[in-house]
Length: 192
View 1 (cartoon, rainbow, N blue to C red):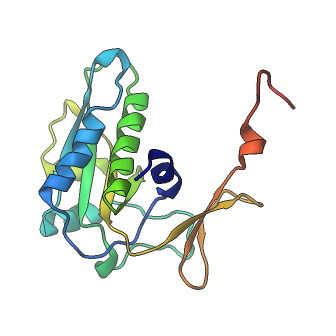
View 2 (cartoon, helix red, strand yellow):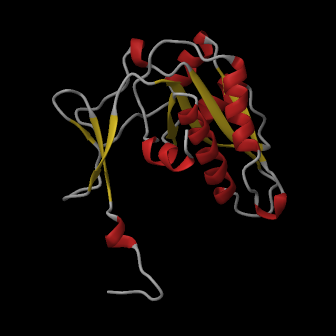
């Protein structure tokens, strides 16, 4: 898959087929995150792969899903992710690691797209419950989760009209509004 095509195709997916993902593929996704750029090459990020059915079910219960979709919505039992990648940061890191996390997460999600998988980065999570479930020590910060699985929905990028809120149509197709290039690009100087 061409990198630019993968970037344009990758959308957040929140409905998944109940088909397991091989350990080799999941390890490749983490490896893509591992080799992302890191500020001062400090590499403060570690990962937990979660793919056992029982533990995935426990992690699922810690997640707030799709805040814009009304009424409140979560994937049904037959639409849940079949794996999660938990992004961790050592608390003794001496700088703000958010850029490292973003670069790593995007590498993971692009690698997932190249493997024919869907993904969704999740920040609305109950971190202390996850800490207990996954036995994460206190000196490690839980940053986020990436839900992963084979896609069971279509997500379409559309131009923003009146709102940034993603939505589903009557056929359950997910639409994600994005600003148009000509509205955000400035060449050689800022134009008003």
